Image 1 (tube, rainbow, N blue to C red):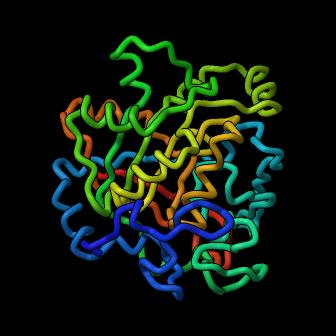
Image 2: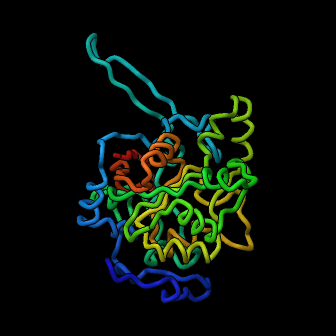
Image 3: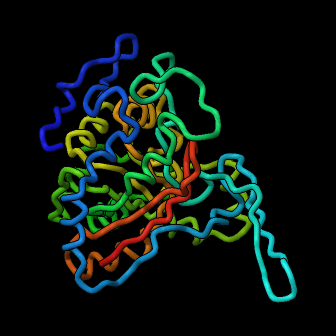
Length: 312
């Protein structure tokens, strides 16, 4: 876990022209980069806790409202089991409609298949690459935040989190240097674009119109971006926008989802809420924190609500 190859040392997928890490953790691997959340790193992350303050990193399950990308709204029902007991149920719970993890079943690399080369279709229930493998391993460790929105403000850039602003690998390196932040092997990398605050600033009519035509700032889909993220050897990448990468993307550059999830085994998290975390970290002058974000234990799931928490 401490002797990982550099991106340019990974083999190139024939016919696709992109590098893959299918042999780094073994062809039978179901965890991808979550393997980097070792017991030693979790123990070290616990040492980051200074005050015990807990900060929620998940949006409510019914936000965004209306849902994005054609998903249906969640329906929550409360009913009486008897005169003294209430119960409730949820219908139309789209697993990736709010703060969520993209599992390794989410994206395939065209005809080459899903992570490690699995080409068969998936059915509900336990199996290869199901999100239950992340649950059973655990998803806690050292979080580290790069604040794109704050960097753009501090450096006087023209920036709108709801506009398709492509953030480059050079930008991420500059932001880390600006913050004095080192990205370490096994970190759970968090990137704040300011999308949550910009979305919440819209009125109901604005949100309805936005759901019909989603645009936002995000990471570009380039090989240089994949190279940087892999060479940092992070365990996961979570962003506060709906897709990690810029929307709409540039087809000439390519899809970061395809480069990172099926080929490199990266865990992507989307629509995490860093609006309370970012000022708290800035105030204490340290952008590292203990983070936990355990998916729902639904065997075979493609994605899951994030259940994310920072402990400061």
